[in-house]
Length: 73
Length: 73
DNA sequence: ATATATTGTAACATATATTTTACTTTTGTC
DNA sequence: GACAAAAGTAAAATATATGTTACAATATAT
Image 1 (cartoon, chains in turn blue, yellow, red, orange):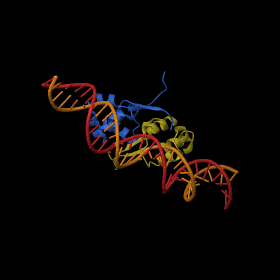
Image 2 (cartoon, each protein chain N blue to C red):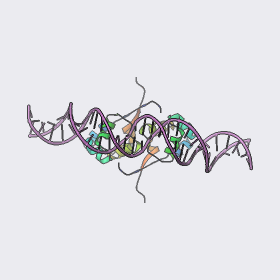
Image 3 (tube, rainbow over the protein chains, first blue to last red):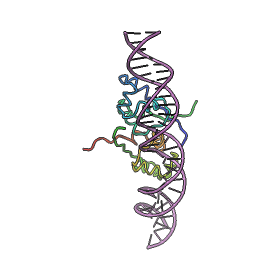
Image 4 (cartoon, chains in turn green, red, cyan, brown):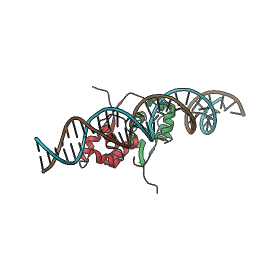
């Protein structure tokens, strides 16, 4: 697998959208709070299904939530 | 996990973009041809990393490639 | 019709996403 | 400061994405 880093703005977006709590977002998406925590901490690489459900739950697009981290300056 | 179906247009997009072969796309992304085959056949739920790399390889957006299948008519 | 490239699959192994349970740390409120 | 809510984290179990190998089916060209 190609070596790239994926970044996300899930936590930031969650804070904006009505101040959802981490657990509440997890519940809307249908994953555990721990899974959501790890995703927000960018500790791993979630599946497209979870990502699309997060985007839907936060009324935003997957584009704005997840992107490939380009090379350092 | 919430019960939704994820659909994609990877095969369609690949056909358009310079008629890449399945194996060639797999190689650009850095997965095996079998994995790409299963993704195109919508047999499972790839990771966001693979999806972003496919989008990048096909010069398109992840939005246009993957979406939640809405309820049947 | 016969080669050849490409695609579809299947069984098994491996890596890792996700869950479960539980505890600690931080943050906010009184 | 005390208390509660929310967030961070960790170990072990489970589910599943991905790799490996191999072969069958289909398409494409000659």
